[in-house]
Length: 488
Ligand code: ADP
Ligand code: MG
Image (cartoon, rainbow, N blue to C red; front, side, top):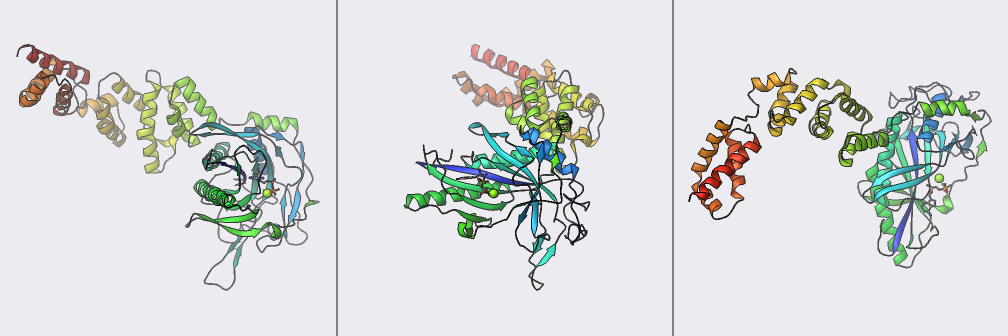
């Protein structure tokens, strides 16, 4: 909780999710991001007179998919409305959206914060379309317009004012991004604006149940910015209240390079959108059987993977969080877990996080094209498990060699002479040498500084270039030292 003394923050989000459908919301124009300006536009995107919209099945089904994943009620009959405002990037003079009867109602999204799990209630999710883009090019006179984005399908998710801190907001956006990627409803690419949110923020005295007037910070396209904007607003509003002022209801914008919010407009300038039912699109009907089909098709979600990894395979929550960041990586890890028998799952997760994931990042490849086979990985981990190679040598030397030229792991280990030695005579010889070379340390040991044995142990490992079986080395060192102590 954002406890700035006697005040608490109250925050609600409106999140716009740009969907990854092939075509636009109301016509067959290409909906993909980018492209040369005004190449994804037909007469319908440009709202020429006489053109008519046609709803997009993928838009509707993906909305339902997200709704079902969040436990929303699916509206059996939802309608489109027209929301009027005048802006150059809005060719029709209105946005086609859902006002009175959104496709998804209710639901909750549980996010994980440092303080534990927080349930955020969803008010509703509705379908709508994006506007075009104005480009304010300093080299040309006036502004330029690109209508490629006009009509691209969006979902707007509106939450209840259930957030109490910027950390919760940050987690929500981060986890929502992950969820839409798992569900394949959006690419979740924040840089390209696939997830943009308006943060509504107010503060109130602790213990007060009512809602104070809020400020809405518009159009934030990163979880980090949302956190900063919320923090700034909370401080600003608390300062106002402390000074005996009230907080005016306002629309504000976030200025990233200064980390502040700035006034855009007051409540008095609020739009009158003149909502009207959209007469050109019939009601969207969702039958029970379609809803059930979509429900059956829901994939495993981040939290399903996490609970599988944590409960069945005893992976730590910290590790399973990292592993489930990206769906294909979670799926690949699951596949590895399921195909390995004699390897502890925690040593697999250690290898996955420390070696495999960084390799994927560095080489920009997908998990399923990782160059080593399950057998390679299994044998690699078994050699460590059976103390045939020390874990550090395996990670530092055997692993890069194996990646360099994938082959039988044991043969490679032998070829490179990396195997751990349990040759007692050899270890004994090394230990004697080391102890002979450091009489002053031996004296310390005899005076009762037993910890010195660790120093010798380290020397033996070093001299054997990490190959001595550590347990054996430890025993041998202690034996010699004790013997010396007894014969002094
Ligand atoms: P509007 O219709 O004016 O956009 P809504 O009631 O739909 O207002 O709320 C929009 C968003 O603002 C929701 O996410 C809601 O949770 C949030 N919200 C509403 N009132 C407050 C408040 N007093 N403080 C913080 N957030 C609020
Ligand atoms: Mg609103």
